Length: 170
Length: 239
Image 1 (cartoon, rainbow over the protein chains, first blue to last red):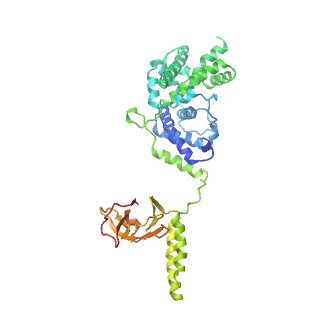
Image 2 (image 1 turned 60 degrees about the vertical axis):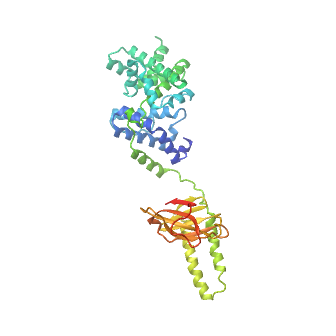
Image 3 (image 1 turned 180 degrees about the horizontal axis):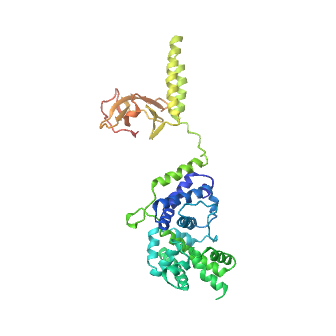
């Protein structure tokens, strides 16, 4: 990222090659529209090129995934790519080796780990993350008490983390 | 349930991005001051990142995930390259043979003292013009250079040169010979024969038009040259 900040096109191309599958795949999963997913991918990468200071450190894969998800959900809600000046970001957290390891897993291995979760936990997580549904939306849509939805999300994420740690240490 | 317990209960949904904005703002404020909730958040966030990676597009057909069009990368990189900082290019290396070729112009001129003044001037002009043209071709930034062990083949427009340095003398009774392979041809055709200069630097301008050729080769042949190669090529360069 240092070289991207210095306007190095070759460094940016390396960044694109490394992360475009994550960005495009995630946008496609949220939008279910290849053309719109490409628009989001282009918007995300060009936003990084135009303002690399938006990334303030930590795990880059996790950060660009959150940026992409938010941008794609924004498109779902407005059905138009809206270029925002501020990129939504969660609280900055300390860089953890564990997150790096998990983020370095490829999509196929993570999909396998998700498959191992109980169906209702996986469903709650996927509705929340890819569908942009709030936990209240999920409770309403699935006819499940809100407290149960909260538990499913928390337990599902914990199990996913444990399964992935198992994958990493095998 | 205390306020803390209620907020802790929402940390997982916050990490997943499944809280309405007003609730998310409350959890975010709380996370800045509550170590326990912060630990819960930091322990769950890697799993959320993993959920994102589960959607990563993959090249294999079995995954069912498509990849973005290569044209997307072209579009993005076109804009990026247009705005990129200019690259600091190292000054182009001045090949040894090129410096030698420049010196050759002087050496040739000083060897003409036995001719009449007019002859000397005319030959000097013709040779200098030719050498300036060759130097311009060799030094042109858009010339195409294809290296081989003892030098390189240089192509500039239709003109083609073999530039060699540290080229050993061939065995007694032998010469070097260039061969050209025309596009679509199956056999090479004989071209010029030549000997290295004492310095080991040799510049040969081939008479063939580079644009009609697919490859150039060099072999060691008997004096006078051959109609077909009689030895294994010491260089073979595809154009």
